[in-house]
Image (spheres, helix red, strand yellow):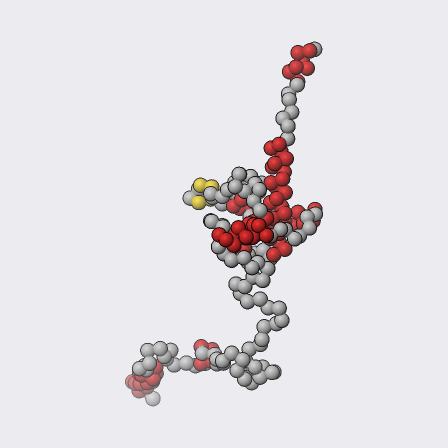
Length: 208
């Protein structure tokens, strides 16, 4: 077979492949060498299928499975009324002790410090175009005595610029963080109400 015939053969084969891949269906992917890699067999939910031991195409959820977006631990709606109701009704069910405060602090430093600041004063490390993120202090008039239920609500749903942290903290962890925040507020009030210590050094020197 001479060069001319080889060229003609290659040209003809290429033409056949190109023509075979051109179909009228605009959604067709063309020639598929392993179609199962592109279009895996699909089944209706719980349809009988030979791939599984029990002949079912999908397994039922395990007992106790909670659907995405469903929170059995928090029945209050995402409304102003829900916020107020949570504040009035919810109290921290987690006993406060040193280990709880330590874990609450650890979780706070991971999830909250960057906005609310290490001390809870709103002076976190997050910046917007070089300016501090506008986060209120836990010690201002609106937050110093904020109800625990409203704090929990804010963690679940988010509040103002703060997004939901429900996917980051489970219910027990949320209450631990709240215990730590409350401890920051207690320490702040203790320091604020501590009587001023008079500087008597000058008077003592005058007597001498």
